[in-house]
Image: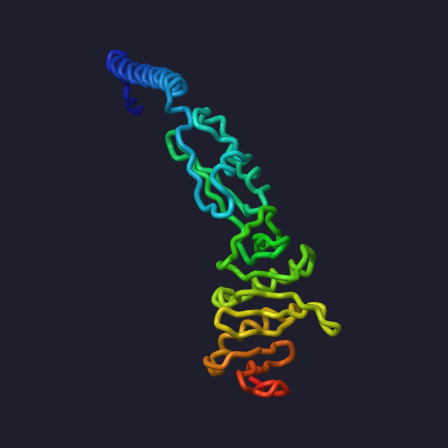
Length: 262
């Protein structure tokens, strides 16, 4: 018969006592940790650390900080955990200028509101005031009497689908071409209700149509580079590409100036 290993009770008792002691210590440590956490939580919620201390607004240009804060309804002194970040973001998106918003908690008790606004594409002249037109085609309610210089000025437009189509075409242009445009006038003709007259910052005038505006104006820098910078005139982009110089002083009134195809 094989011999079996026999472990006496006397040998097992110390090991069992040690195991039970470790298990009891772990339980005690867990209870103490939980108790300490509860105390710290009570202290935290009763202390100024649980109250909103500062709110910082970033990324806004068109909407003042005060309006952002008013819509968000976040105020100093509120409980940090009573702030619903998703709800605030949704409320801010209802502002016509705001494309999206994100609210972040900067531990322990500060909030940062990051605002992403719709881009400013142009200004609409209406009632002798200049109204901002956003890239989504919306016209802001508040107008200014100061002449804008940071975006093209639109004249002769109404707040309708033609204006939205114009803004869409502007959005298709490279930034460097957009910055060259000073003024866009809607001047309908019998043959084209979308006829445009543009005045450029470099002194040229452009005759175009909304139908092919972005397609033709994209080549404006290349066209101008082939012209004499000392001789200004009208660049016709309605059909093909033509240049007609302005009449110079002393020229006959019947002379329409030089005309060349580019």
